[in-house]
Length: 250
Ligand code: BV8
Ligand code: ZN
Image 1: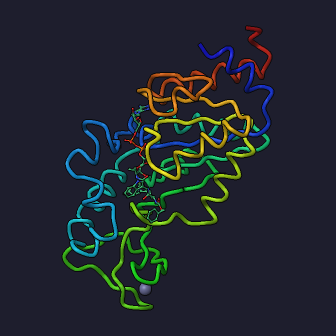
Image 2: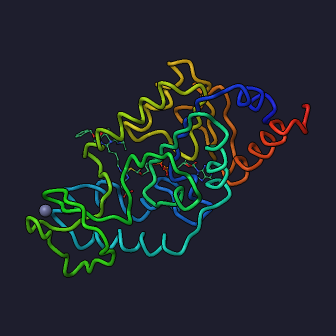
C-alpha cells in the first residue's frame, strides 16, 4: 500500500504537512463537519465569528469552555506521534495545522504553524493584547483587558478574520518549497488553509492525502489513502523506518 510512496519519501529532503480536525478525531475531539461534529449542534457563523461574540459573548464562551474542558481530557493519538517522528526524518519539515487543540505540540512536533490560533490562549477582543495564565473564563462575568478594557476572547482565528500574516506567509513558503506535501484529516474547505496543498502541488511537490473521505483535493493528489490517520500514518512511518534502516528491500 505505501511502498511506492516510501520510494519517494526516502529521496525527499523538504516535507510539509497540513492537518485538520480529522487528525484529532481518534483522540476523541469531534470534527467540525462530521455528523457528530462540533458544528452539528451549532453553525460556524453562530459561534466562531466576531459578530457572534459581540452579540452573544456568553454563548461563545460557553462553547469554548466546553471545548477546553473536552481537550483537557484528551491525549494525542498515534497519528500525532507519527507526525512527530516524521519531523525528524527530513532536513526541512513544517507542520501546518488548522487545529487549535495543541495536541501536535503535546505529541512532540516542534517546527509547527498554528494557522487558526490556540484554544488554550486568550487575548483582548479590542487591542489583541495577549492575556496569559488565566484560562477559566466565567461566561457570566467575562474579564476585561488590563490595557484597554476590551473583552477577553479565545486566541483563535474566527471566520471573516485575517490569519496572522507572518504565520500564513511561512505556511505558503513551506508549501512552495516542499518536495512532499501531506494533507491529513481535513475537508479542504476552509480558506486560505485549503490553498496550501494546491500551491505545493503546482510548485512540483508530490501531494499525499490521508483522510476518511474524498475531498476537493482528492483528484489533485498523487496518493489518496482513505482511512483513519491514527492507523495509516504509524503504518507508513513503520515501513519508512524499515526502509531507512535497510531492513526492508521491498
Ligand atoms: C479569511 C478556529 C480573509 C476557530 C477556524 C463566505 C463568507 C465568509 C467567509 C468566507 C466565505 N467564503 C470563504 C470565506 C473565507 C472563510 C472560509 O474559508 N469559509 C469556508 C467555510 C468556505 N475563511 C475565513 O474566514 C478565514 N479568514 O479568509 O480572512 C478575509 C477577511 C475578511 C473577510 C473575508 C476574508 C478564517 C478561517 C478560520 C476559521 N477558524 N477554526 C475554532 O476552532 O473555534 S476553522 C475550523 O475549520 C477549524 O480550524 C478546522 O480545522 C477548520 C477546517 O475544518 P477541518 O479541519 O477540515 O475539519 P472538518 O470537520 O471540516 O473535516 C475533517 C476531515 O477529517 C473530514 O474530511 C473527515 O472525513 C476527516 N476525518 C475524520 N476523522 C478522521 C478523518 N481523517 C483521518 N482520520 C480520521 N480519524
Ligand atoms: Zn485590550
